[in-house]
Image (cartoon, rainbow, N blue to C red; front, side):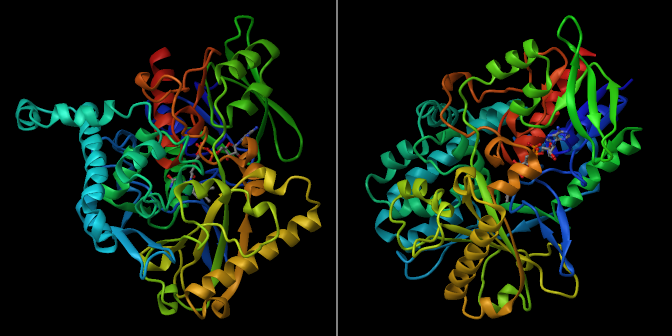
Length: 512
Ligand SMILES: Cc1cc2nc3c(=O)[nH]c(=O)nc-3n(C[C@H](O)[C@H](O)[C@H](O)COP(=O)(O)OP(=O)(O)OC[C@H]3O[C@@H](n4cnc5c(N)ncnc54)[C@H](O)[C@@H]3O)c2cc1C
């Protein structure tokens, strides 16, 4: 008999299990894959470690970061080291003579953009000013302050709150259009990393962008030294030190409920095919809700399915990871993260067309790419050999639907060749330096994570139906004892998944 069982070992499941174990609960984590972490983790290749997902996350100590409370409660900062990324992103587009280097806080980003767009200083300041005020409002609401702080901020607070309230129901496109009108270049530069969230700026909730992107622009991005696998290992260690058990190769097949439809436990299958039953009054559902609904008896399964409403799954991503014969720096790469915008992308709206490109063999239209050179920082991914370089862009499962295994392999090989050629055009010598390359697609994500469509951020960050109620938390489900502890519980990404895991643990412990 356990106090809680996590179905899946993604960051949300591990966070919920670690917090429960730390609070004295007996926990079991069941993971279908051979390793823990879901989308988070690293794996050995060509003498270095390849990163599965992490490009950048925010430092937990930043006020208002939901990871902060988790790191404090678990003492994670003593086990995990964050490496700062000096320039959050370099953006390269044929529309500019040289790269725009965005970093140095909101003020630094403003100067960089004024340098490349000297006629748009006021518009840039207005847009970044709205982000700055939104961050201040979030900080005012999410952090406890003393009287002196409130007195010092009294004059600014109404303006900060107005920055939030006026665009509560707006999309990223709405707000960018208000600030920049039909001038698209500043929009492209400020949303060059859109694949970190979505492919559709018309549906992307402005507040989601303002807070997540604002944190990155204001406080800079960070990487976990040793890769996201180091964070996963630390969470697993905390669970095991607390007497909990983490099992890989353990596929949950059924969620067991009682006559009252409340959770009673799970049935799972080991790698040898043997079925086991474990009992617990709480399940942290880290697998996608659609999958969890399929594991429940009909009544509770239907209830969970209905509770998800009409929300759409987020985008998926493709990723090509390279082992190079020389450091990226020697080839001319000058930033940790570079957004390469193709010449056909002239408008923010063009992002929508990008996600379908992998549905065809490569043509002269390349997708926008985010290139991460892990050798530009002390990433801890390689010793004595150059650190890996990875390239990410938006993908959809429909792009690969119906392809036989041979056609799928051929499509991937063609795209690796095309992406390599694109990088070689930007940084001559890149292709010759490639020792090996490996590509993951939406299909890989679906197989590895078990998410519908290979979604990597839970639900799409669309403008919510009831924006004034704030971002919807789906952590609590209609099935008593079942909590969504994943990106599907709230927001996507490392911060969103860990935040939902923490919320799931809090609610489960309160029930206990
Ligand atoms: C290429 C890429 C780049 C990314 N870059 C970033 C980034 O830079 N910054 C950022 O913040 N985020 C990034 N993300 C997103 C981030 O990694 C995810 O949003 C987050 O890790 C999701 O965590 P999760 O807890 O929802 O679980 P997931 O990672 O989705 O894991 C779910 C787990 O449940 C397991 N499972 C499913 N069904 C069962 C079953 N029946 N039985 C047992 N186990 C089961 C799966 O095997 C999986 O391990 C990126 C993702 C990808 C793929």
